Image 1 (tube, helix red, strand yellow):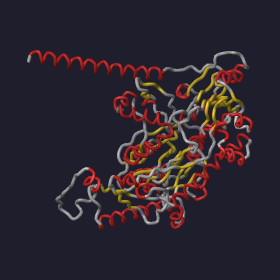
Image 2 (spheres, one colour):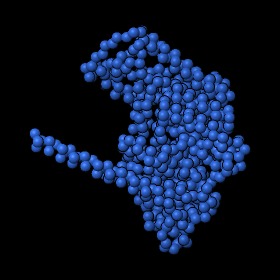
Image 3 (cartoon, one colour):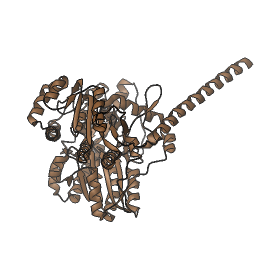
Image 4 (cartoon, helix red, strand yellow):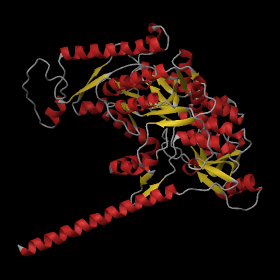
Length: 591
């Protein structure tokens, strides 16, 4: 026995010491990453702002997540600048005498061609060129989204054996009906009878798109693709018909010489040759080392863009809308309401801009947030800037603002409501051999149970609630947007619209991005000079570090590895967050 305890404690001590060593190594890696990312970079004369954008770009830079991605053996840092810093960096670079130009390397791109974010970055790059400084793009293989962004450049270069993949746009939905049938799971769907475009629930009971869903997707995609083709046509002086013809034939994807011949690119260059091109721009051809500075580095040292006693409050609302506290990827009804309230109560904040990038979510949380928007709009100008998505619940929380900006390819509308309640009785009984029995005090004490179907009365009650909620939604939009209720109903019914179409329908007020929204807010507040204050306040970096679960890093790594296929993983994440009545728009575009 003595020998046993001796061996046991020796093993235990050894395991404990190993655990301590592993923790020390982990934190050393993290602290090292922090230290390296915190190094201040001096912007030398004749520097180049270097952009890759090969990650899922958030609306707001978050230094608290350290940009750490686990690569299998250690953590590595990424240049994870948010839209706020990317846009402000481009603005600042235009007036910075130490920045000679911008070099964009687009061999991979973390955003979709349909993305309103690309439109905003692209427009800012075009404005930057007015300063007389250069913008050069290079890629070994341009995706369609990467090429669309590259057309904001003075010069576009492609690797001699590279690809330029232009093939048009598509949307693809995943359907679960046959899977649920195999598992004997019934999804009980409750939605208003006329919400025929509310396609979020179709995967549960169909195995392909409904006619209504196909119709709205065709209108949406054609609107967005027309916008992209027109922009490319203007930038490269290529006829739209030529773009579509080459897209249909897939010629550009496998023939870089054709891309050069048709003026889609300005040259086929190897990496050493693109370096020589940049040296020509900066040093007149002399063989000198290029000074490249990344987005996150430049964000710490760029010239000040906003200075003034008055402040514009910028509130970020990004992700699916859920009850309670949110995080960087979800909008919490409680936490976002608090942020709006703080901006409203801040005496130095003279106007508020809320950046909405959301497919929607829980109805109750959406109304909690909208109420705070309404209260804030009574005290100071409240402007909404719609990002990639501002649909369903995302539109709900925007509706009580004073003015709404959207980009042409913003996905908005989707004014509709649904609820789902799974019935797992067949799965439990037939697949797992589990049965259930119950005792209850009242007629509907078992309401909400997933182990049996809802009773006819429960279904009827739920249907009444969802229908009334939809009526509340269209009444809200009718009142806030000064539109006839019957008209709102005709363009609602869960239908998704592009920003270009939404402005014609009266759902948004003006086409424009975050910069235009901030400028408009300042004008409404009578501010000639102003500074920006962002909400909600980000946590201290070490508080965030100790709160963050290891799982978060693995999720980020998984999305990073999946690339554009991450949409399927995100679909399951969205489904996992569904609870109660939903104003939600899951739609996936690929290109």
